[in-house]
Length: 404
Image 1 (cartoon, rainbow, N blue to C red):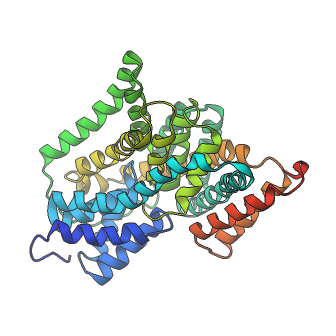
Image 2 (cartoon, rainbow, N blue to C red):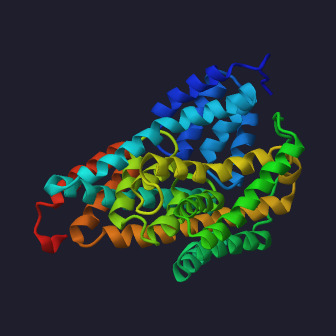
């Protein structure tokens, strides 16, 4: 284990993570690779095995995995201030840009503006399909987990909304306990963090209290601010792995109730692919354009706090107990099943709302297929494919209506 000789400055952590927040394109898996290259291989903040353990924890818990790992790296390097510095520096660049896009999205009118919006909604099909493809290869490598994913697809499609997703996730975890115990291997002890068990219990308790109390308070008061915070908090609390997996949860919390239109939702989601940093900052855009709640910068701030807070509370809360828990074979099996269910939930979201709202004819289908091939076969970065989609959308507006 590579230990820092002394506790380092939070400013050092801030500037390192700010640079990565401005340059880390490609989603959570790519972010974790950037972290490893910069902080393990180049700066030697910790060892490869310790970093792998931290990544495993982020994948195990609900919330944005790359943001949780970054938070943990800052905590390990410079204590609580380092954790805050790492999170803010990595998150703010894309959050600010998404808020700006939310304010500017209304100017996309006329033929060119409509074409750009059309292209961005179509490219979302390719991007989510790529995410499903990649996650399925990694998280459903055997018949048992592939079956769990298929069951989760059916549940999520038949029981629309957050309840269907929760049932699919719980069913996947239970199935994992039965079908996925084989291969649960031994693991070594993880690095220690400056978090006491008392702090851990406080954070876990706060996470659970908010998860239960917010929906009750929203229903009892009908105060829009609480409704908005509850929707984003619930999305952040129920997503595993982060990244694209948050799409169906935000769909259920924001799109299905009509707070934003399908075009607004998919346009913002596609725009988020062209930006560095965590995809969860898509919430900042949704908070900005939402017809419910404060909207604007206040709405963006509320949405960001709501979507990131549960993952960070759980991460801090579990740190003191993680070593003992992850040694259990049943815990490893449970997470195999839950992760397989996540693939199914995302696949259901690929169909509805992404595909059904974007692919209305042969020409949009061809553009989506082209973008998918660029991502999968040619390995073109997502931000570049977003540009292709925007240009393609403008071209589509010039075609006969029957082709659209």
